[in-house]
Image (tube, rainbow, N blue to C red):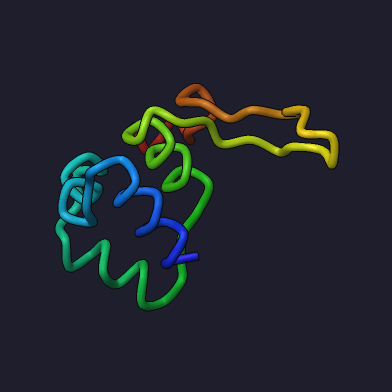
Length: 78
């Protein structure tokens, strides 16, 4: 998972520092998430927002069945 997150950030000209800033956490806290592999859906939705991409479940034909956006982030985390 970490490699894919870093790859997406790189493709978009970003890095983990920018991701941490966007999430409103320190780079060391983000590093801890990466070390432990404790990414959650809110983290991935925020990553999609930062990178101007979509987080979705896609079927074998390439059709997005369910797409996640900022409205899906837990209310307590906003």
